[in-house]
Every structure is written in structure tokens, then in C-alpha cells.
Amino acid sequence: DIQMTQSPSTLSASVGDRVTITCRASHSISSWLAWYHQKPGKAPKLLIYKASSLESGVPSRFSGSGSGTEFTLTISSLQPDDFATYYCQQYDSYPWTFGQGTKVEIK
Amino acid sequence: EVQLVESGGGLVQPGGSLRLSCEVSGFTFSDHFMDWVRLAPGKGLEWVGRSRHKLKSYTTEYAASVKGRFFISRDDSENSLYLYMNSLKTEDTAVYYCARDNYASGGYDINDYRGMDVWGQGTTVTVSS
Image (tube, rainbow over all chains, first blue to last red; front, side):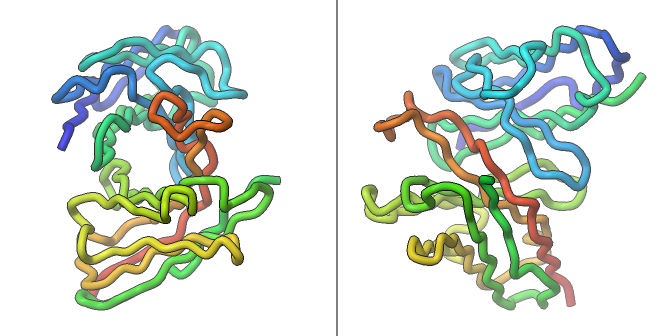
């Protein structure tokens, strides 16, 4: 199975900050990576697919980059609605796997 | 409005069985692959399995942790996806979500995949004696 490792596990930031989350795959997954975020008690929400393609309706302050084994999710200017847990997920091969999550907290 | 509604969760003893349902509306269910994903208490998201549609012979995929115990089926006439869970373990305790797979029009290659774009609100399964 492909292991996905995110860093950091927790991130404290303020509104307006630029935030970057890293996701590393144990094997190359080309660009077959998605990013989701989830708030407590709510369903996950798709942000990015194919490593860098923005899902329709997702604000442009979110961006993704990377290929192979190293990927990043960047939020250019953190907004109050962005405090959540973020997950990367590979869909290169089965079983699909998620990273352990990065909780973005208010500083 | 595109909607996915899960049901069937509850309290079950270890070794027991449960069937979860996901009823969809607002889109053509038979055109889409579908997934089950779970969130255990204090843990991260875990992909459980996938159901492909008729054109792909209704084939399925499963996570190693549930393979041989969980089975996914679908009824296109009822716009419903199901998760049959057998030999349940305490570690299966989680909120279970169904999600729709989105592909670019006309393609089902990995390059056409656009993520799990619609999710249900989840149903809670508790495995405990």
C-alpha cells in the first residue's frame, strides 16, 4: 500500500497568513492526488484534484502543486472559514489512502 | 439539488452485521462510480471501498482492513448504494460517508478523474459490547 505522510500534524495560524501543508507519498503517484478539508461534524469537501486542479467553486486562495512523491497545498491568505483538518489522498493505486491529516487551528 | 443521504448506522456487538444505505438524488446515479469513506473517533479519513457502474460490470475495490468482511453493492433502479458489514470489530466504529466519484465527460481513465466531489452527511456505526 502507498503510505501518505502529511506535515505538520497541527498548524497554528492567523487570519491572513499564508499556509503550506506538505504531503509525501511512499511511492511515486505521478499527479494522482486530491486534497480535502473537513470541519467537525461535517462531511469532507474536495478542494484540489490531479495535484493542482482547483475544484469548481473552491476559492482561488487554495492552490496545489507537486508530482511524484512530494506535494503541497497552499492557502495564500487564511480566512476564518478555512480552519479545519486537511487531508491529502492518493488515487494512483488501490487501496486508495489518505494522509493522517493536518489540523489548521486559530493562533 | 444533488444529495446523498446515508442511513442504517447504529450500535452493534462485535462479530455482528449491519447494512448501510446511501440514497442519492439530483443526478444520474447509474452514471457514477461511488465510494465509502469512514472517520473513526480520533483518527483520520480512511477509504473503505468503491463501486463501479454497469459499464464497468459493477466491479468493486476494498481497503485491506475490510476486505472479505465488507461488501458494496448498488441498485440503480433505487438510486442507492449499500455497504454490507460483517464480522464487525470495535475498530470499525466510525462515521461512514458515501461519496460520488466525478470524471470528465466520456472518460473513466485515471487522467479523467476529478475527485470525490459530493458527500453525504454520514451515518454513525458503533461496535461495542
